[in-house]
Length: 420
Length: 167
Image 1 (tube, each protein chain N blue to C red):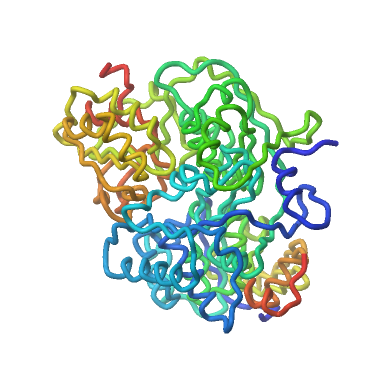
Image 2: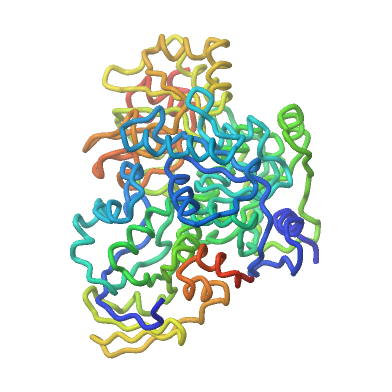
């Protein structure tokens, strides 16, 4: 019996023992990441250990992105802790505000996470990097401390669910709609502890940003990782960025999948996740009238350059509806600069959107666009749990960037064809 | 770590995510004693003040889904909760809890039948739960070797530093 791409990559990271689904393994880690809310706990743990010997200091990125630019004194103290730790231990990849961005957009862009890697991050959306053909998964702060002490991580080898997509996507539908539709189909339980492998002609046609969007939300299904086999699109994205050598792996033709699901997506329309779960998904045409107060375009899910471009095309020459706030956040300095140079930020500014600095911002209700009681937002981000963006009595709907932009103009959740 | 746990049960539903266990706006805090004040704030304000050391959380499917914030199991442990019993757990929460020495038990049967306030006793080694209030016994599959070692060492870091770590 052959191996899945996930089993193969994990197999390359163990020194002994069988890599078979369900077994615990101790795997060596290629790259690690932590942010301004998870790294402080890791640092506290390490600093409590007398004479701690820390390994892999050139294999970790510390990215202050959640509550930055520092939202309050406590957040500033946390970032100070990261900065001092980076300086004391000579950590190469500490990204200061101005050079930092949303970690899961920043690391691929910097060529720090690569095909064939095993990546762990103290952030659940670390699964984003699976779009590059690596095994990448979210862990906790203690896990990260353990990996910094030992260079390794304990992992249970996951079973894989194969998801096969056929058909050409219609205008105004994207990777976001594929993953929302898939979350609805899988529900909250089927994928727990498992790997999701996205395959098929529809996936092969997706650009990297849409592939990142899909793998990003694998965790919303409860999966350990989402992964897409690398191809020429991956190679084109990575070849001038990679900081290390990398390898492409693929599932064997006789690999064992716990389940295979096939989707014909040629008639798929834009999808919207309703409160309070990313799997509570409906076709946009089935929604009825849902008025909104705020729109957020950004995040590690859908803040990529191509996403901003799609949203700008929808909104160009129009204004945000009177009762609506549109918040646009390019997630990295590179994306910010490209959007600035190409006139995309001007489109948003003329539409009377507010443009924020690279940060996670409103996605997790921390700062820059927190919702009050009774307010409703549509967002290109990844979660819509109770209180996710602010007050417990606020609501978040999740959609693709074109739907978000159209909704900002119309003032209710709207199909992009209504404004184009 | 004590292998026998006794306490009162506190019952929660399905898909309890980490945003309701500890809302993101409190993640600028790292001290357990600070985090615990906001434990379950969206669902039950001042929850921690009602908990007695040793009490147990009971929950439905997919407990701890969402973000990787270790602040969630840290706050639960700091409240005095000794263990969580659920129908299923989200995976990052699962590893985070064992990594800090908070045992999690998967036992759907007791979740179905228990009522909040029932007094229960758990034998972690034997895989047995006794609902003293309802006088009913349940069993759960023994912990895998790694998970048991994590419990016995009170978490990953003490286990690694013991020099005995093995898979």
